[in-house]
Length: 495
Image (cartoon, rainbow, N blue to C red):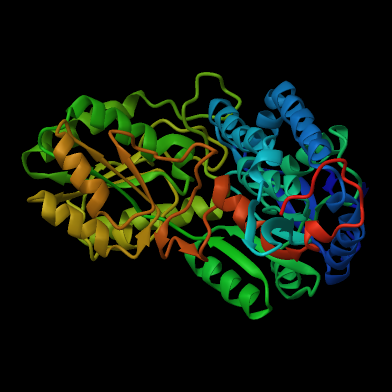
C-alpha cells in the first residue's frame, strides 16, 4: 500500500489535508493504493506555482516550446507500454485498449509540435495612410483541466498539449479513481525540458474542483465528464469570469439501414459498444435498426458476443476488462433489471457468462425492443450495454436521433451514398461516422458534440483548442511619413 501524491512546482508533494481516497485494482477488487485529496491550500499552491512560472514560459521562444513538445512526443512514444500498463492497473481496460488510448493522445502532442505555424496571426499593410493593422495570438495565463477516469492519459493530452504549446501554464486535476497516469505524464514533461511550475498535478475531489472554478488566477477551465457536472462546471466557471469548455455525456446512436452490410454493421456495433467495457463517451450505446434489417442484425450481434473474452486487462487474450469500480458495475446491472421490467428483451445477460471470480466484471449485455421512454435509453449507462431500437423508416430513425438531448457522436451504416450524404446533413450531432462506428476526429480537427454534450463555444483540441487557449490582440500602428524621414536610407524617397 502506498499513497499517490500531487506534483506542484516540479516536486512530488504529499497531501497534508488528511483526506484520502482508495485506488482499486478493478481486476481483483482490492485496494492497491490511496490518493491524497487536495485541500484548498494545496490547490492554491499549485496555481501559485503556475502563476510564478507563467512570465518565463510565455516569453519562451516558439521554437523552444516546439522543441519541448517534440521531445515529449519521443518520450511518450518510448514509454507508451509503461504508460499503458499504468492505465490498465488503475482503470482496468485491456492493454490493447490502453495502448490505443496512448496513441490517440500522442496525436495531439504531435499537432502541438506545429505551434509556430498554428500561432501565426494576420497583417494588413496600408489600411490607411501610414497605418498598418496586425493580429497577435497570446496565451491566457494559468489554465486548468479536470479530466475523467475513462481516459486518464488521452484526455489530459487533449488539453495540455495545445495549452502548453500556446504559452500557458497548466494545473491538471485528474480523476481520483486512476491518478497515476497524470503523474507519469508530468515526469515525461519534466524530462522533455518543461520548466518547473509550468505543469502541475493536484489530486482531489469536489474540494479541488470548486477551488479551481473560483480561483481568481485561473483564466480558463477545460472539463470532460457527465452532462450534469459539465453544466455545473460551465455555469460556475463562467460566473467567475473564466473561459470554459465542458464536454458532457453522450447517447451515441448507430443508424443501420436495410441495405447495410449486416456483418460489417454487427462487427462495428460489437467493437464500438463493448470496447473498454463501454466506458467511453464515444461508445455506441443504441443501434437504431430500420425495418427488415433488425432481426438479422440482432442475430449477428448476439452470435458474436460469446467469443468476447472477458478478463483482467493484463491478460493478453482478454478483449474486455472490468468496470472501474464495484459501485459502478452494480449501477449498470440495475439498468438491465429495469429494462426487462419495462418490456425490453434480454438477448444477452452479461452476468450469465463465465467471469473471473474477483474484480468488477460484467460481460457484454444486449437489449432488444428498447423504446425511447425506458431508462436504459434515456440515461448514459457508461457500461457494456447495447440497446436495439427498432424503427420503420430512415425518417423515424433520424427523428429519434435528433430528439435525443445528447448530440455527441452518431453513425450510419448503408451502401447508399445518397442516404449517407443526406444523413450527415440532417443529423443534429457534432461528430458523424459513415460506416465508421466511432468517429473521433483526428488531432488536426476538433472533438466535441452538440446539445447537452457540450457547454461552451469551442470544441476540444485541434484548431478550436488553439483558439480556446489563446486570445486575440489587434494592433493598429502608424509610422511617420517616410518622405519626411531624417535617416539617409541610401535610395530616393518614394513620393
